[in-house]
Amino acid sequence: MALRPFVDALPIPKVLKPKLRHKDFTYYEVRMQEFFHQFHRDLPATKVWGYEAQVPGPTIEVEQGEETHIQWMNELPENHFLPIDKSLHACHEGMPEVRTVVHLHGAEVDPDSDGYPDAWYTNNYKKCGPCFKQKIYKYENNQRPTALWYHDHATGITRLNVYAGLAGLYFIRNEQEKALNLPSGIYEIPLVIQDKTFNEDGSLFYPANVDNPPPTYPEVSVVPGFAGDTIVVNGKAWPFLEVEQRKYRFRILNASNERFYRMSLDSGQQMIQIGSDGGLLHKPVRLDELILGPAERADVIIDFSNQSVGASIILNNTARNPFDFGEEADPLTTGLIIEFRVKEASSEDTSSIPQTLSVIKKSEECDAKKTRDITLDVGTDIYNRLLFILPTRKDVCSVF
Image 1 (spheres, rainbow, N blue to C red):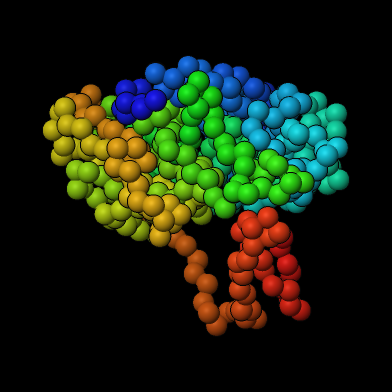
Image 2 (image 1 turned 90 degrees about the vertical axis):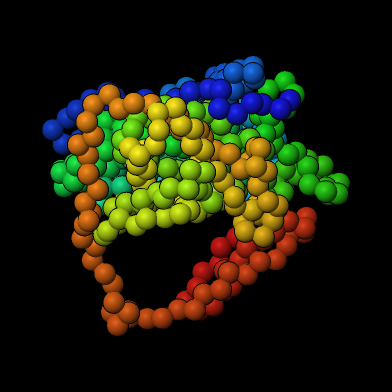
């Protein structure tokens, strides 16, 4: 069924409230739950997984230096609703189908709270992986203010769990950033971008087979790469957002499994990038297009003040998939992300874009103590799937 773009308003993920504010830490509880979610007005509600029954999960906002304690609670069913590849490590017979562990992507955190892939656990901690050590994760949040994101990280099924909906944003803020007078409040908008494919009944599709699967594993779901044909932002397929004639700050996350995005505005205007994965840049950078790979974040300002009331501006995607040599984006589907609909400003825009955003300590090449030349080799496994390997040498560990 062909879905009409730009008929659903962009949802804004809720900000999660803590269960407790102690003088030494802030405590949250986050449940992973199965529920039904409607991705488009013309699709029936479909089974998904989400943190606090939301897709994407609620946004967590903390202050720099505020220690955060989070109990990540698995309340998911025992059986997965997406195809399990039993040829993968940790997915063999006898292993629980549904395993989760949360990784706060980009966080500077102690190993016990980093969401190691084998530190998984099942519903109500009935079964746990060999590296499981604690139920409550601790985040010190001492790094620069930035946008992080949390997602499932369980070995062998990360791609399935994130695709099912287990992903959300985590913002670290401080007073210096607030003093910059950037667009804020309702004018700071998170954009969590993913790609999905839907079956005829509206359920999520994920490929269950590779070409010529081995007889011992007839359902091998790890293909060289999977990209959906529908672009979803904040849980809605090709949504629209009404914007005033003023500046907006967009916190963009590419939460897709494989797809890159090469984003540009069809109005021809530039975007102003003010931050990346590690926080604010030193100075703003004007861009005709913005490229984001999976898991990357970008902090971008778009100024709609010179646009006419009633104007429609589309954020397009022109990245090939696989990036950047594969199939071109379809201008009617995967080439569309979100539509901005301009309306009159409700008040004067007093926000600003400072010429200097932050001070970043630079590392000099002469400070390096040792130089290592590391290659990433690409081959295939016994099922003819892509296999990425860091070759073993004295000072390099292999990753399989």
